[in-house]
Amino acid sequence: VQLQASGGGLEQAGGSLRLSCAASGRTFSSYAMGWFRQAPGKEREFVARISRRGSSTYYADSVKGRFTISRDNAKNTVYLQMNSLKPEDTAVYYCAAGPPMTAEYEFWGQGTLVTVSS
Image 1 (cartoon, rainbow, N blue to C red):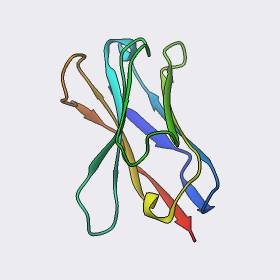
Image 2: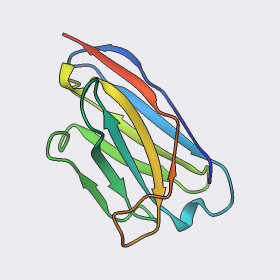
Image 3: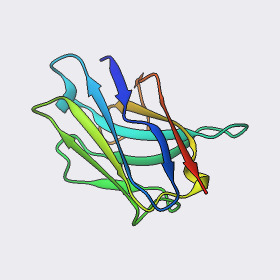
C-alpha cells in the first residue's frame, strides 16, 4: 500500500483544515488507518485511528472533540478534519496503514505540514 497525504497548510488559530490520505492498491479496506504527527524537536505522536469499516475511531486526548477521522473505502481515502486549531497542533502529519486489531502500522505516507499561527 502506498499512501499520499495532502491538505496541509497555514491556518490561523481557531480555524479548520482537512487532511486527506489517498491509498493505492485494492486492499485499502483491509487496513485500519491512523494519523500521527511530529512537531519540531518532538517525537512522533498518535493522533487518531479508524477501523477498517469506519465503525470505530480512537483519538489522542489532545485532539478529542476537535479532530474527526473518517474514511471512504470506495475512494481509498482517509480524512482528518481538524477544527478549532491551536498553535500546538503545528506539526508534520502522517497517515499510516496497519492490520486490524493491533496498534502496529506497516505503511506510512510522506507527511504533510500543518502550521497554525496564533
